[in-house]
Amino acid sequence: MDHEFDATLILWLNLVGTFVFGLSGGLAAVRARLDVFGVLVLAGVVGLAGGIVRDLLIGVPPATFRDWRYLVAVGAAGAVCFFAGAAVERVQRSVLLFDAVGLAVFCVAGATKALDFRLGPVQAVILGAITGIGGGMLRDVLLGEVPTVLRRELYAIPALTGAAIVAVADVAGSTSALFALIGAVVCFALRLTGLRYGLDAPSPIEPRGGGR
Image (cartoon, rainbow, N blue to C red):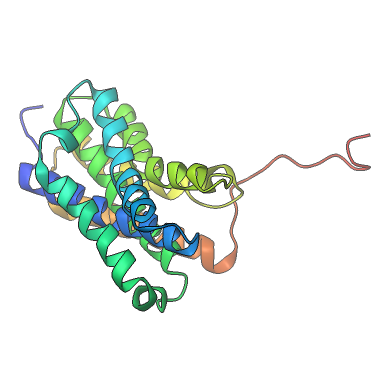
């Protein structure tokens, strides 16, 4: 293909996703009663993990280490959570809300960057999902919880769907920011719908009698 996604679009998707996922990690740290260092570390790890893994899989140096704005984004997210955590916590289920926003933004950011580096649509969808779920998985692991993506919840499916919308648009010859927006909105809507109505991904049917 001779078309590329707008570099500014990719940058802002990544920065917004980094900040929002940083809020998710920082608020989780506040709830876990970590100190200021723990809040900043968890905000940084959660905000940056998905992008770092994506870039390493693509085969390029992580943008996190080449652009100071990513560190500012997670630093700001951590500071907001530490100093204004009580105010942010007033938003009902705030961690889940910010996690859903981060998932939506990062899944399309990961897909657009993969496509920009001439990877195929399938690889782009996979990398989009990895970018989206990476930060949340690491957050849960560091807090000693089973990662959300491994529970019976709609988490990976929304990320895959959002990334797929971007990939399909690219195959059709369009790199318009509109499709990135649509992908993010669809991912966000699916995630919130799953949370609101308790929808789960399909799981094996347990045999009767406790497996005997």
